[in-house]
Length: 330
Image 1 (spheres, rainbow, N blue to C red):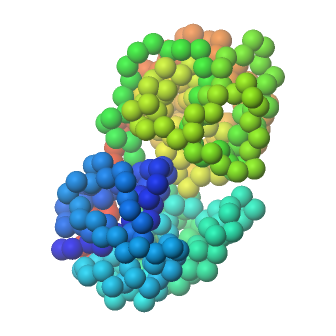
Image 2 (image 1 turned 45 degrees about the vertical axis):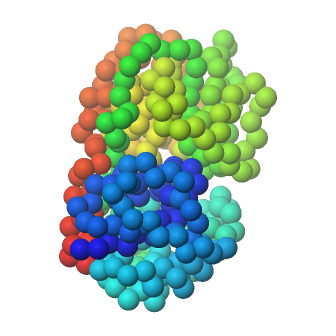
């Protein structure tokens, strides 16, 4: 069977949906063609796939007009929408609905490309993969999608992320720097600490986020560098206000970082009992949790031990097997 994959999430730096697309695609037991409107520079792990570039200035117009012309037996849309004129059965993956529920936290082009196509995409999809039960429930409530059409295809963590080495004196965040990630909560709490460790914000530069000059912002880093940052962090903090899943805390746990995260997305499903979990938007709770982790050696040692043990239960193979079955039966 030949699977055509909408490769737009793989263009540029591989984060979030791009990680999901690559990790699932590399494990599919089919011939795969990854199509895109721009060159995909990072092909790591995807050496078994064929790549098809049909150059176009706008990704959404390419998806609607050119992607349907790529020959295959089934189409996978990992970006949440599908070409409405697809000629073959299609499976779509949903990661979140924040462009609808939180439009002021997204760029206009994201809102238009997703919001205008999502309803019709869910109708024409043979099956719908959701990265968490939270997202599945939103699809059923918001769009009337029947439960029988949905399957949970969770994110995971690769064996590459593993513990090694001693901790350093810094607090780490990894992810896009944008409002819904709760960066302002982290900055406010960190600024109130005395004494305070270094704060490192690791990820693509976002928007509407002002960072003080004494905070280290790395920008996007390759996963080799990210692994080292996870491994040596005194604390990893992920104060997101909404997630469909939430991959970075799971990666941090796998590397042995003591994790503080909010109870959003799938984070409670994989982190309960192996990380400190707090409510989103609660700066007092974040302050208390961070103070505990920074000053309690025994707690940090316990979290460093529990994190990798728990993360081993959440590899990518389970999600890849489920996706393969959805594609096979589409």
